[in-house]
Image 1: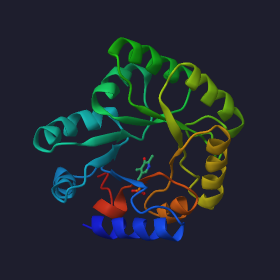
Image 2 (image 1 turned 135 degrees about the horizontal axis):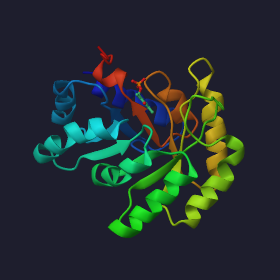
Image 3 (image 1 turned 90 degrees about the vertical axis):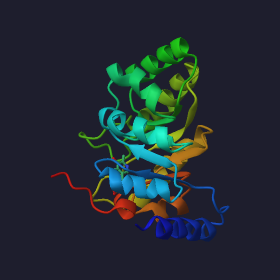
Image 4 (image 1 turned 180 degrees about the horizontal axis):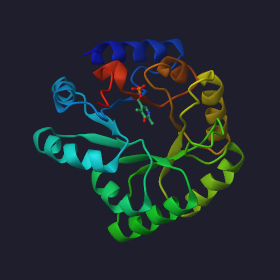
Length: 217
Ligand SMILES: *Cc1c(COP(=O)(O)O)cnc(C)c1O
């Protein structure tokens, strides 16, 4: 396992960017990984993980929570409105709030439950048809609407197009966050987390570089 390598590379990128060491949160993306690999990372003391499906997370994290204290779980994939309540039970943070209907469902359930996960709003910086997120041109209004619903909006999230220079997308996301007074930036994956940190990432989502390749078999 190269958890230690990734931590070291994150610290180096933080220093290079003139940022405080430890200021970036490492979300270990455990989707599709066999339980033994996830368990090995838990045994090393890591507690912050990301999953992209509610169903998959529900099938593996309750058991881990019985055995390991302080697990901090992040939903980084698409959320269907009918799974929102289940997501509240599993996740401390939702990174993929990408449309008004989901935002208003979260707001209603937060009222009913008396608590709400931290929220990141997803921006489709590459304006790709197949990708979730609000368009950059609609982001300011969406951010304002979500704040108006009293959602705990911590920041923005993006997944750059695979065939483009990610830095341009990271810079765009940082600019939108800054003009809206948001601190959190969920950006950067195995191949580009150092560039993301240079551009202000507060949360990096790293899967295969920690656990190895995913076997979708
Ligand atoms: C799978 C996934 C990641 C992690 O990807 P790696 O390339 O394995 O680091 C990060 N973010 C999201 C939204 C993902 O779905």
